[in-house]
Image (cartoon, rainbow, N blue to C red; front, side):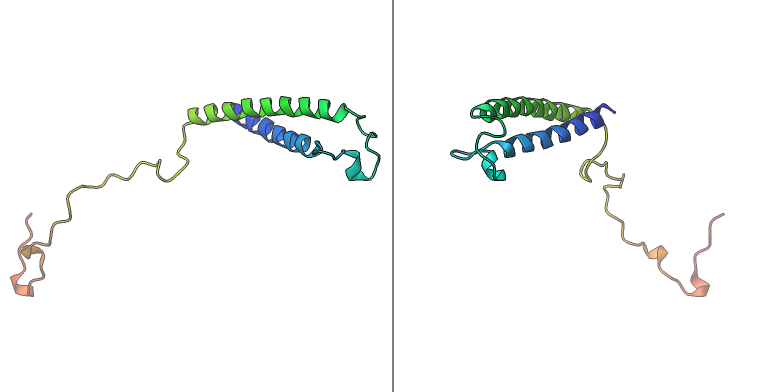
Length: 116
């Protein structure tokens, strides 16, 4: 139950981080320029750098915490996730013995008697 909740939170934080990174502008570009508006319409002259930088740092910190939490929770889970983790079937280590001469087919009259 806890593992599922942390996975859901982790995926949500991943999308937030992707959005925060994509909204940041590169050198010489403004966020408003990509939508055809003026350069100061969305956040102001220094607004996007401060707000989006702080948002990205916060989301990245939560992302790292959920990553570590998922690693710890996955280690504590008790299930075999791969074929390698499964226990092999019990088999005898001795090779199969060749058939004995008594096991060979005999003519009808020479068949050994069954012991009772």
